[in-house]
Image (tube, rainbow, N blue to C red; front, side, top):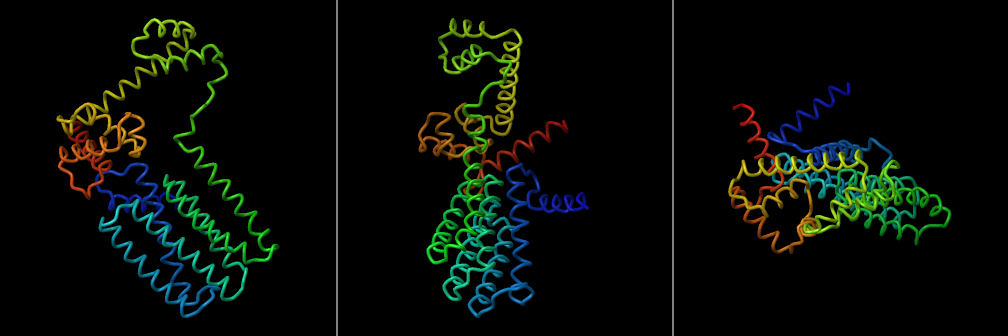
Length: 328
């Protein structure tokens, strides 16, 4: 059953991404697929009274508008008018606003503190968690902000007993979101201690090696001598593997565009790693205007339009070049 389901998703993925689909794109694609299809089934159930739903003319009209919006969004998504990332952003924000509006409307018009409001706010919390899971932290922060505003209004207008029942659930959710955002992949290794079989002296030596200048050869030799022969060998092998990988990546980029400058190649590598403009500037110690200008030059050299996603285009071109090389 799971194999059939996975194969079905894979076929849809190949329709959306005929040439290449990276891990990031796959996560966001599956996320949009699942969440939007759930809404496509759930909203008609609301409209036609197939669940325990509070009906009113306003709610019914809003559900019809929301259904039409999702259908239009699906069309824009499958015709590549909207990217997968933009589709996820648009859909999640729309659902978050809808659920918040529903909850506040029910709270002020009926004075109810029931399961519908709690359910809606819980779904918003789930959406924030899913946004983090697909590496869209800014979206998660936006959703959490809307949720916080809704919860604040709920707490101001609700009896203390209802507040105490609700806040325990959301406290756990907020702690989970804070944990994931704080310890994402960028910070996961920050300040990470080395394995126990490395002595304090060796750890200090490695830290000092990282911060040395090119001209400090004597210090490099001195610090390397502090490491055991086993750790010296492991360190050098890892360095060799790293530079070999960098060399391969450089060759791949030059194969698709031989006129790329060394600086443009470094930017391309960071773009392929899905680094943001801020992260690229920090890594290369350059200004945003400089990086933006070089990205424009890269686009021109690759004959890309403004609508083409640079990272996806680089992946497709490299993948095509690899395919041609393997055939020959």
